[in-house]
Structure formats: structure tokens, C-alpha cells
Length: 114
Image 1: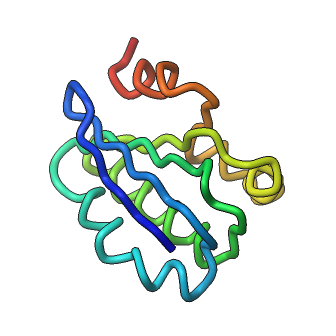
Image 2: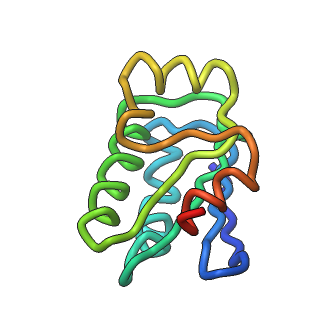
């Protein structure tokens, strides 16, 4: 799994994931991913447009970090998941925990409280 992090304006971090969020993929990125979700009031957008498979361990990575961030007044949103990945997110009711957006501008606005 490929992982890149970009600092956007206003303290928002964009994490881009590419590949399969299965046991092997999550093991490759978990430490770095969690590191970018650390700190006080983190604001993270997770770009899921390059993820072509989402297993339960990938869901765990997202939910665990989102809940941890929320407890520190931070927030995570998901951006532009593929239709297959969105189906998995909907079946597991993840959008109730982590909001999902199709446009970067909308995701940024929510994180900034606009």
C-alpha cells in the first residue's frame, strides 16, 4: 500500500492511500498513518480514491484513529472513496462515525468549521 501525506492550509493534513487496505496493506502504513493522526486537535482528510479494497482491519485503522482524534478535539473525514469501498463503508455504517465527502473543498470546510 502506498501512503503520502501533504500539509494543506489551516493545519489540515491530507493523507492519500493507494492500494489494498487488507492485513498486509494496513501493516505497511499503520505506524505512519497513526503518527499523522496524533497531537492536539488534528484535522485529517483521508483520500480514499486510490483504495480498491477495504477489509475489516482497514476499517479498524480508520475508526480507531478517528475516535482517538475526536477525544482530543480533532476530526477526520474521508474523501472520495471508490464505489466498492463506499459500499463497504455504508454496510458497516462508518459514515455515522467518519463523515465522507466527494469534494476536497467540502472536506476542508467541515474541518475548519465553515
